[in-house]
Amino acid sequence: MDALALEAKAGKADAAPAPALATKRPKPQKKAKRIVYFEVEIVDAKTKEKLLLLDKVEPTASILDIKSMFHKSNPQWYPARQSLCLDPKAKSLKDEDVIQNLPVGTTATFYFKDLGAQIAWGTVFLLECVGPLLIYLMFFFRLPFIYSPRYDFTTPKHWVVHLACACHTFHYAKRILETMFVHRFSTGTMPLRNIFKNCSYYWFFAAWMAYYINHPLYTPPMYGEQQVKTALMIFLFCQLGNFSIHIALRNLKQPGSKVKKIPYPSKNPFTWIFWVVSCPNYTYECGSWVGFTVMTQCLPVAFFTIVGFIQMAVWARGKHRGYLKEFRDYPTLRSSILPFIL
Ligand SMILES: CCCCCCCCCCCCCCC/C=C/C(=O)SCCNC(=O)CCNC(=O)[C@H](O)C(C)(C)COP(=O)(O)OP(=O)(O)OC[C@H]1O[C@@H](n2cnc3c(N)ncnc32)[C@H](O)[C@@H]1OP(=O)(O)O
Ligand SMILES: NC(=O)C1=CN([C@@H]2O[C@H](COP(=O)(O)OP(=O)(O)OC[C@H]3O[C@@H](n4cnc5c(N)ncnc54)[C@H](OP(=O)(O)O)[C@@H]3O)[C@@H](O)[C@H]2O)C=CC1
Image (cartoon, rainbow, N blue to C red; front, side, top):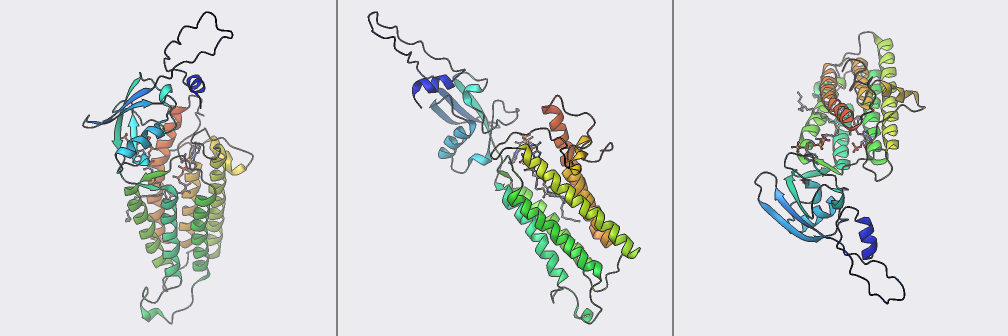
């Protein structure tokens, strides 16, 4: 990019006046304005210690560019681990923010926070979903060390046990495939510490649920076939709903885009729930597990559903508040996760 093009992009940066033109030049020359570079100072948000001074930063440099420069001098803080703000208490700047568009003078001070070790979203979802998938199957196939040998000659598994295994496997296979082919995440990573909490939840509960459902002494649901069939309908309906919402959320973003928009109902009836709920993917997710609880009539499944619901309700409320803050025209009829209730 030549200097002129750079200057044209550099809307807010003050440019130095061009030198006066000579009186007898045959053709008027294009004004060659000088680019005004920025001086960037990176300060620790907590200690206020100066960590880095960069001079001659181009006005078109993005926050991600600055993070990369900072990373060069501090290899332990890779860009995804850094938060840069204009004030120690302000929200983090976005990677795509450009220095010349920020409310700073030619010397910009950025406050740095270490976000801690990070893990890529794709890895998170794969770890969270492959674990329960395999753990459940180990119990379903009654690997020899799991149940006592004294049950070896008990009756074969009830048909609902096969159905539950199919539903459980389908659910996690769907989530893995969605992670690979549907979701368009806007941030690359999340804190590494979350993975321990999430995996404990998924893996522990998968083992606990599977142990009881596949146990040779498992008691099938009280109301028999009718209960199982109704529960299966609820489960499948909610799985389809959840998938439809994931597609709707995917279609909100162009590939590579990080911009969040207000999701609206589309022609797909499963998305009409957007009229009344901000995070219907969580609503459908909870509905699926309610269906699975009724289908298996198993207490650990009910606990799993309740804990998952509490976590998703907390996230949904956060997202709902975020929408209200960001979009002034956000539909007022919407609740976070349960229509008209929560
Ligand atoms: C009896 C049984 C026992 C069983 C075991 C016990 C288990 C215990 C139960 C727990 C239940 C757990 C259920 C888990 C279910 C999991 C479900 C999933 O599969 S979902 C996939 C995984 N998703 C997650 O884990 C969510 C992770 N997301 C987050 O943590 C946050 O969204 C975020 C930190 C990544 C970003 O937050 P957000 O609000 O979107 O961003 P803000 O810009 O508003 O920032 C808020 C705050 O966070 C800081 N931040 C931002 N990004 C990061 C980052 N990448 N790393 C670290 N910190 C980050 C940001 O700086 C802000 O901090 P502040 O101090 O206010 O400046
Ligand atoms: N059983 C359980 O306990 C739980 C299960 N889950 C399951 O995992 C699925 C994914 O969970 P989670 O990641 O928390 O779901 P989110 O709704 O946060 O995100 C799903 C995808 O949609 C995108 N997205 C969300 N809102 C918008 C928006 N307004 N504009 C543009 N894109 C958007 C996200 O991108 P971005 O990166 O921009 O946010 C992400 O790619 C859930 O739907 C659920 O099925 C989740 C939590 C708990």
